[in-house]
Length: 409
Image 1: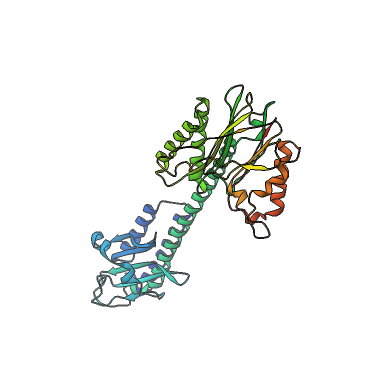
Image 2 (image 1 turned 90 degrees about the vertical axis):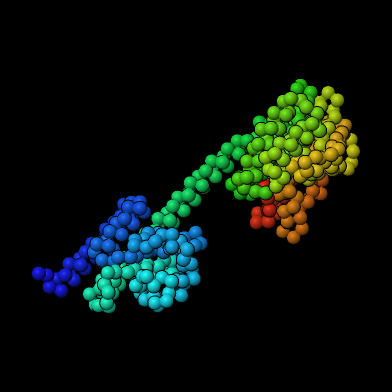
């Protein structure tokens, strides 16, 4: 027959072995179900606990992770926040007889940074207090054992969160590359002997909501646009790509500008349910008549310099932004005669509303001095951009920045 010291020595060996096994299970990344089954077997068979439950704070609420000898339905009705919050010391505590959880002999708080993140509630088959009771004699070990499990759970959770973040970052980088493929560089736009384009685009974050495009409709007609989707991030980028696809399809059908705007408004309303909108400037230039027809749908008015005039103009005629209203009402179409050598600068609010180092908005009047010079549209846009970068610190830029220049030959 084993003596008391021998029995205790045997149990202590098993306790150390159980702790090693638990840590090794987390190291091998076993599932939580397998690990909790392992813990439950140990608590029942080696520590002779007849009733236990581990309550863990996760997703802003207390919930039982595993339990034995307790009614789960009843546990779900317990307000653990109220009943267990007072137990914040780092040693086991007995429940008072009148306590709602008095069916358990002890509660063991498990602390992290001096705050409880879990509680182990335990009972055994012993009727009287005795030094032989495992839940009394080995409370320190039980505490360490439960702490090891909770820390393992926390590490698993953090690893999972970091993995999600890394996966999201990878997907965001891919989305950013895909979006840059959609935003055409200047040399991919339909430059010819009657019209030329030069552009600058930089998103504030990985992906943005600014957009521009140009399309050769026929030998005489070239359509172009610049747009800004409200909001930022993934949702704005998805709406932008949808807008681009639909706009290209509408361009190819050679529809009148008001019809294009109305169809876009209907499409965006159906997608967003009126919680997003798009500001858009849409133009169509005919080289045979040298005329520009346009609609400004709530966008920053582009600045045009007509080579036969001294002053610049702002192109404001149009309607409300796309997706702002179910019915845009009467859409006003602007029309201009465009002499050779004229220039048009379109931009988004990331340019005009960013503050200079002097605390003022960059605005649109800063474009004017660069437009009445005889350089190409590429040089004009490059000079505007250089001045913008000189005047506006990078930390003052509030949104995606896009400059879309059009030169009429």
